[in-house]
Structure formats: structure tokens, C-alpha cells
Amino acid sequence: QLGPERPLYFCVGMDSLVQLDSWQRWREIFELAHLLVLPRPGWALAPGPQEQGPSPELGQFLLARQQLNAAALAQRAGGYWYLCQGPLLAVSSTEIRRQLATGVKPTEIEQLAQPVAAYIEARGLYANNIEQEA
Image (cartoon, rainbow, N blue to C red; front, top):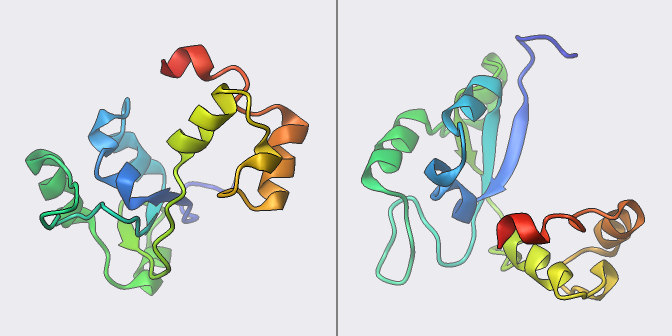
């Protein structure tokens, strides 16, 4: 709808970035958008002793596509990833889906902002993902 030249941004946590090669057709994401990556506790591109990181192949791929200048992302429609600065949030979509699968209501999940919880609850999101992820 926006055209092939308009930059698009897909936000993920560092935990998702370093496991990206487990996603189906993950390389295609870079053809469609830039990734804006939020730091996550325990995850890093170059992990220390207490952190998890990417496979060597994915690590090389990501190093070649990392953009250190956020303003430069606007020059292309996609193809790069940028590490955003921000607090280390211990919220995980996998953990949220796990809690929802056990019957916890979205509004009872501490990690979810109330507007997000209300949106999930009103639209019945994640209700059918339980068997697919098990």
C-alpha cells in the first residue's frame, strides 16, 4: 500500500533477533523491512558468559546488516537492523502466550500494558495458537 520505496520497520527483541534463523523464510524479512531491535536481558549479538547469542552463520549475516545510524534507515525500504536504546524489559511474547494458554486473562498479565491487554482480550488474540506452539 505504501509502495516499495517507503521504509518499513519491524520491532523485535534481541532474543528474537539472535534466534531469527529458526523462523521460516527469515531472510525475506530484510527484503521487506528494517528491524528495530530492543535490548533484552540475557541476550546479545556478541554474548558474554551469562548471555545467549546467535549461531555463527546468523551472527555473520547480522553483522553485515547492522546499521549504527538510525537516520540512515530512511534511505532504503529495508535490509538493515538497528539496536534501539532503552531499558532492558523482561517481557517475552512466548511467556505471554504461555500464560494465556494456561487460562490467564490478558488483563492479569503484569508484563502487558493495560491498553495492550484490552486489545488482546477484545479481539481474542492468541486463543488458537496453543496447539500450534506445543
